[in-house]
Image (cartoon, rainbow, N blue to C red; front, top):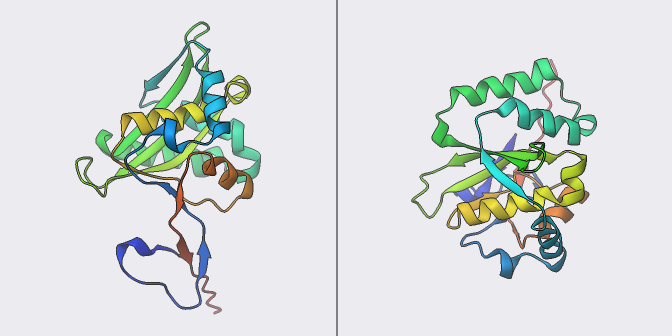
Length: 193
């Protein structure tokens, strides 16, 4: 069981503290992103790309699987297809999905899916970064840096929640954007029959 304590429930006994980076609002990428993120964005901005809002979750999940599939152990039938079907049941205003497209070739370079919680007009509105990734060319161009920048600009007054940051390489990547750690707590219970 995973618990966020920002809801006021307190820290459970015998729980393990887990890292969860968030970007508090307002977002000012040119001030909060570190030098490496800024360098990657300058490199990305040299290319003719667009950020395309989409409901084509399968394409984003395919990109995610290409980027992270071996590490996640997810399977299409059990995991990706089920998640895609669940997304289709949500109202479109609860999801923000974006594909990064190369304008010269039409190739999809990367994509991400975010889920909204709270009203966009409220101070407590969050965008939960559920999944994202890039194909080989997108990784070379720094497309995921661009996705984070795009979200910061599109939703400047929303908290961006990176949904767990326990994998060292992932945590290091998120730290480029000037996040703060809002930990969550994990409780493992083993009931033996």
